[in-house]
Length: 430
Ligand SMILES: Cc1cc2nc3c(=O)[nH]c(=O)nc-3n(C[C@H](O)[C@H](O)[C@H](O)COP(=O)(O)OP(=O)(O)OC[C@H]3O[C@@H](n4cnc5c(N)ncnc54)[C@H](O)[C@@H]3O)c2cc1C
Image (cartoon, rainbow, N blue to C red; front, side, top):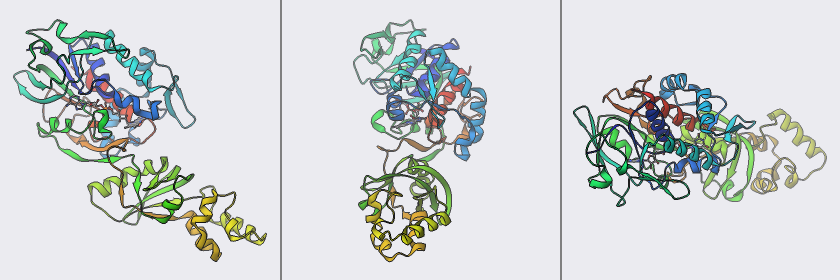
């Protein structure tokens, strides 16, 4: 049976980085990816541009439970090291005004390509269509049961389709490669679990890898969709469908304001979306989908550049000029808002109009699902891994990295920052 020093489960951002660092440390490495290609989620990220990092990297951008872990990992592999890593691979990046960083090509495929080139350069063994179905402890390490989804899964194909190498033709320490023997088992000294979360299952990460960690007794904090649109049954959503404005949005859980975010508010057929909603969705999804709390609202300030006082003055000025109720919001908000607020505007009750414009509340009925959530909140409990090494506190030789852990970053490059940094730290351990 083929033997490696390290097997990495999952060929996403975290797994590829972990494999590169493990190989650079002189170990033999097998990277197993259940999909036919590596890094599918990288290609989808940042709307195809891949927001690889934020210019501010730090523990404060993550859920409270993850902060000690994030602080330790970024202390070892922070912004400069992540940028240095990609610079060495040949990827040039630029920073937008909002602090988000992208490859200068504005193509996520450039990010994946440089990672694949490094895997090729280092001759890391890569198994595609290769799902790790099970693993168990043997003396001195682990034995893994791999799927045999194709007759010859152990070959790595470059982006242009040419076969780069086959694992079965690489020298192994003992025995034949699984591609030749067809048994689909490998042995290794260490395992790095980087199987991702549950969001966008069509891209590969469907939550199956949690079971591999659970086998050793790890706790899985119930995964819920995050960075996700909200279901709201409100006549405004119907009449304003397709309208997008800049707003300040606050999530309210059991009548308590939790977080306010400024950004895009988009009215849709089923409710609310846009960047501001995605940003406040994490706490809402955890409350609704994990804690089963029903009393949840979002409050929107549709004119955040006006104080209530200034808005009162402006609307009074308009009324004094004889502007009719139906045109009162002209130049302030898109025309459709006047239609949505028709009955209220007709009454010319300024206090009520201002309340609707500055504190419009929407009752949230639910969230959209896994196929639309950009991220998973939840995963392997952060307290169960060593903060310095990401090694499991329960099982020696087992490491965890990336979205699989209960580490939820804000939008804006923090989730990929975590994937690169945790992959590098887990891969660097000996
Ligand atoms: C649409 C979208 C846009 C996003 N945009 C951004 C962005 O711009 N910036 C940002 O910071 N974050 C973004 N994110 C989040 C970010 O992409 C992820 O957090 C990050 O890619 C997670 O990396 P990962 O390696 O931990 O997991 P994944 O990328 O999910 O990789 C896990 C891999 O493991 C494989 N796998 C799972 N189980 C097994 C198994 N048993 N055996 C073998 N292989 C297995 C899966 O097929 C998958 O390829 C976005 C996410 C989505 C969905």
